[in-house]
Amino acid sequence: MKLKFFIFYNIFIIIIFFVLIEIFFKLYFHQTKKFNCYAKVEDIRKYTNQINCNFKEKYFEKEKPTFYFTNKDGIRVGKEKIDISDKEKIFFVGDSFTFGYLSNYEFTYPYVAIQKINNKSQKKFIEKNYGVNGYQIDEVLYLINQSEIKNTKNYVIYGLTPNDLFDINEKKLNIEKKYNLVDNLKILIDKLDLISIKYFSSKILNNEKIYTKLYKKRGSKSGYLSHNSSIEWDKKYEIFEEKINKLPKEIRNRLIITIIPQQIQIKLLQQNLINEGLAFDRKILDICLNLKIKCISKTLELAKIHDYKTHFVIDGHLIPEANRTYGELISKDLIQKLNVEKNNND
Image 1: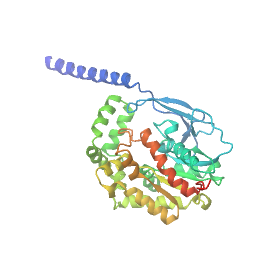
Image 2 (image 1 turned 180 degrees about the vertical axis):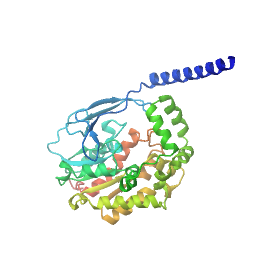
Image 3 (image 1 turned 60 degrees about the vertical axis):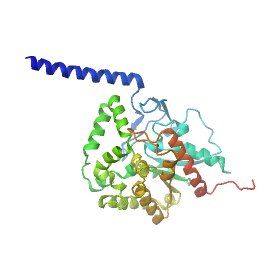
Image 4 (image 1 turned 45 degrees about the vertical axis):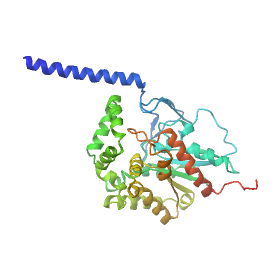
């Protein structure tokens, strides 16, 4: 009886201890619910951004809150309305990196890139940010083929990340997703939404070697980090190339793919593993060259400018400062590709 009481007492103390820690972290970081401005749609995308949404989010790895606003079309905008009557549209498509998750509007790379372009261009542009959290290649290409984007002659910038290709094989072969230990732990942490666990995990994962070792245990999902690729990732790249090539010619001619790095790529570059850190970029650049698609890679420059501290450790998105820098970096290439730089004699 005493032993049972002792065990029960210790378990009770441990539970109370963790509950108090969790309460402390929630109060200390003032974290709110995750961004949830989504609307269901009856097509391949399943969901899209909600229209006229206003959401304030606090996140434990970020000191200041993030403000999100979408307009009547469900695209990301700033709080203040902008006169766009004399400006030419440039469309940005992609996932949460393009949407600018955890970055305020003025730090999102589409906004920053266009501001920099306007400073050196005779024409004036406005970005239309069609990024949606969680979208992959099929959802993005479906979006590109729709309404406004398809029926104009304006440029389309696709912010491509490696995870855009994660589900390609599963969808193509109609097989069930496979989750390994690391994936299952991440899913569990996200579901529980325990800030205490996230906080301590972030401290551990700050070590690039630990982070790299754990990430490589993701099996096929980490295959893009090998400069020799893998059978599965060779297939993913092949299917990706086919999907881009099937876009109508009038869209391909105005498509620009800009490669946005995952945190693991920056960690590898920090360890001077250049071939692994740039493996994905080089594969995509080869595909772009083969298809005669304009393509931009700024992974190495972004890593060096921010001393390899570019992403939120647990969340994995670009920190606002790195997001802004990325916009500045690609703006230089976009100016050349858009051929809009002012004449030096002006």
